[in-house]
Length: 431
Image (cartoon, rainbow, N blue to C red; front, side, top):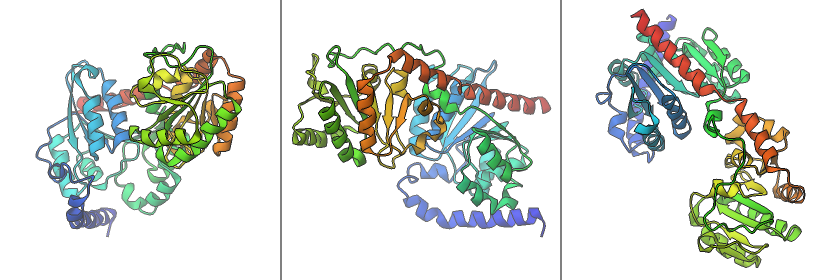
């Protein structure tokens, strides 16, 4: 049996597996919403570009791409996503003010990857170019696109060592379903993709996420955003314990107590990631016998030694602008971390725990420059916070260092859009 026979046999078994799984998928809490659209293609309309964004992270990337498209003629773009969270992000990010008037955007949940359903979906959409974000390799979709000779682009592509080993076990399949172009976010990712797709045009690009972190025209001056009823007293150091997650609360409570023992003449801003944890912190601060106030009750600067428990939304960035130093949570427990770049851009050095898996793409530059300090445990967090309180760097220097590093890696969005449009134009010119 030749390669095509093996491919068709494999796709047949793949499609059968999907059909057998449908009753269980229908009961899945994440997939039951919009289930009828996941098993049909008749609601899909033609589009020149089809972008598939698996979930929340890829949905943000899709928004960045579409927002950067400025075509001279009308352009229809279909953006699909697998999760309802991704759909919520797309609906917000594709609002009319953010999109060029020449661009029409259609949104839909991504159909299940059964070969027959994907064949119908690709036939109805009939895109000039297919865009897959990060690591989106669906055999049913790829086969349907290949049959119609539709160019397939992988944008902001990444592939872990664990994943590449898995794909290598079925390399005979992927070589026949290979994307035409892959723009990987690092040379290492490019090399891993080359092992799976030896005949694909593979190059590197800056990670689009760097464009999303800071606007291209953001000022380099870390001017604080005004805080209504500014709670921070003048000439008093401020430590923020920000984006604190439930799983690390006990550790952060010890950190708070320790830094106030070692440096009592400061104000601590405690900002839980989720507001429903406020009652826990009210009890904890009372137990620690530390003076504290709810942010919502403060209209004038508090006394040094006070902990401000943030129970209001939308002030994190403004608070960073007043901080001497900031601990960024989600990092003392394996939760992936939170955005440690924001305080740096506001002029405050950042301290994190060891768990930053969701931010590996940032690289080591901010840590090497000393504007972000990665601690291995809560004791090291205390050490870094107190060290910076005793010898705070100039805000302008911190912001300039952070922004300078991040800006060096911007431009991925423009590169990706340029590749997409050139590919689409080549298809149109060939017709």
